[in-house]
Length: 246
Image (cartoon, rainbow, N blue to C red; front, side, top):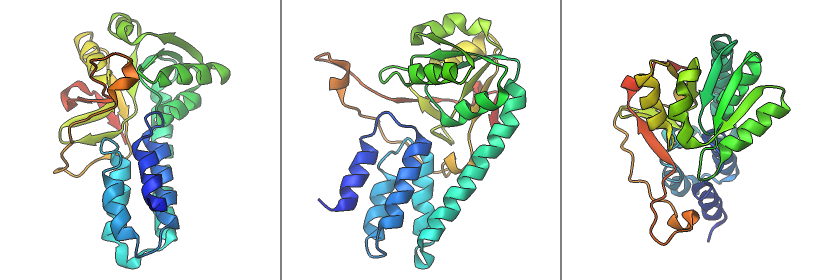
């Protein structure tokens, strides 16, 4: 196995970290590659995490600029991505300030917006099966933010107590918002209870209009049951999203 195949496998099999972390890891991989390796690496990288648009879009950007490739091209893309994320934080924080918020999973962008807003109360779902929402709640408490952990199944019951639901985004396409599994039922509950739902999503996480999501298949053994279906993402149609901040 070539060195880059091993690193792509690590990205593909990472079931805990979010899109921003894995995109940065993808960029570092490409920066190390030789020019002759890139035509082999980029198609595999685009498919490593097909539910994370930023990895796909980064690899596509490099493919489209392959003749002018240099590591600085990767740095340029990442700088633009970080600028877009910081702008979203600055836009979102005043909207969230003083609000009671429900969030699902651990979006680094949502986390930064909550820190910037400061004066917030946050309900964090556990976000099974990996429980990254528990990590978010712990981190927010350490940062002095009023955070409460709830089980995923309680979100619909408690949603009437919040002012807004805030998600990050693994990607947005013509089919809707791709986010941690469990997001769609939360969106349905928010819609029914007339609670606004916001997604924080930079342009680098928007797929081309013709992008088609594959069928998701994850290791069922993670659920420790002989017959199990294990998925990490779901799709929320755009009609249930009140606002996309980008």
